[in-house]
Length: 236
Image 1 (cartoon, rainbow, N blue to C red):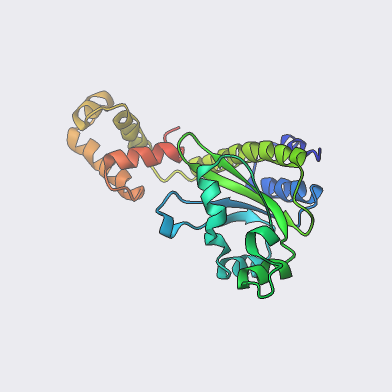
Image 2 (cartoon, rainbow, N blue to C red):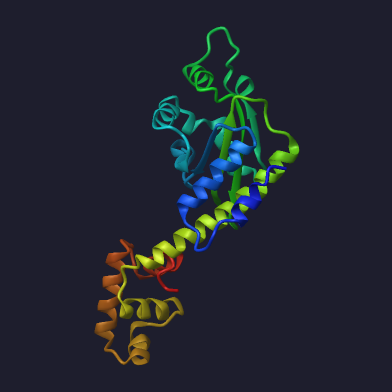
């Protein structure tokens, strides 16, 4: 065991993304990986599927080459990530055909970067894929014990990352106090008239506050604004 979880447990609170990135890279290095990254995969149609790099130690040239080689849309990886919550262990020969006489551009890219094997660890929420941690390097694919430890690390990591972003969103809350009050009551199913009675405001004033909040959230309607504000922590 490499102490990956211990690295997260040792981080001081409040957690920050820079510290999480450091723990991610240290955990990868302790397992013999040279490349560590946090990836997201938007829920969308198959034609638009692509991973997005959130953070990690990928040099800019590697990140650019990864995208240019089409690896961010590589369906043999994206398919399992979307449909299977278990870690995806891979090696370059099997996945990209690096041992072929005339390798593809993607195969040549990973071979030159010594991106030869690794594991991708998806983290699914209650209804969708939240993201994945990716570890890769020049050595043989990781063993079962390492994969199990890194899977637990991934679950803890994404929870801590979500907490960081939730707190950051709350600090940057663009809504006024009255806009938050109106959205909170709208979240409980109250009409503008009912919100006005509770807050001692006219129905027109309540509608103005809700319209302003909807514009600030770039939401399509009041219900959408409530959902976005709650998700981002603005109503806490």
